[in-house]
Amino acid sequence: MKLHGLQKMTLLDFPGHVACTVFLGGCDFRCPFCHNFELIDGSAQPIMDDEELLAFLRRRQGLLDGVAITGGEPCLHRDLPELLERIRAMGFATKLDTNGTHPELLAEILSRKLADYVAMDIKNSPAKYAVTCGVEQLDLGAIYRSIDLIRTAAPDYEFRTTVVRELHEDADFPLLGEMIAGARRYFLQCFTDRDSVPFGNLHAPSAADLARYAALVRPFVPDTQIRGVD
Image: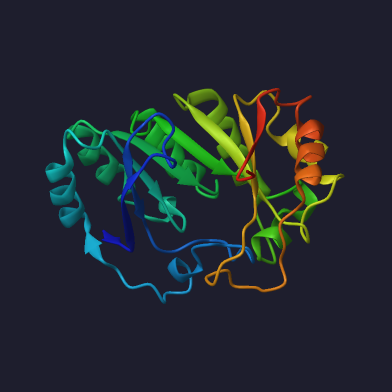
């Protein structure tokens, strides 16, 4: 497996762990607000393979206790379970980030107990999901199946939404809340612009907007928090 990026240490990406973050290339979506679009359009070249990653992890045993796998969309890689299994055999906890488009692979990972924590992006309310993902058509059934899998089978997890002023409004959040009703926790993440974002003229919501959106979700997910606002 080719790896397209490695953050050698983070205290933020894997709750409760000193971890590294591994970036895999490729994605089903073309979200206009994506921070890692170089992993999607092919402009980011691989930096190592899985054997080199495992060699790195052997040198970090005792310093790191977790590995977060993100992308892109990691579940595009059919050999992901084997990589997770090898990482866990070295004593590391594992976290998986996913957009929920591959529930079959997600089910395999969870049934084999290969992920300690799963974070799934919930892009928007159902009617606006496809446009928020930058695609013309989308099988929302796969998204719902992944939500159910995570709620019922993940040891620990979160759902999260990157909120963009131009893409989200009050009416979206009760509908979004219904999608993940009963979830353990949910985060609203404030969009921040950077050079790698593929589309310009996108803006962060105000702190007041985020607080209002969070209040609209809490009847469905009481532990709804805001992330990325000072």
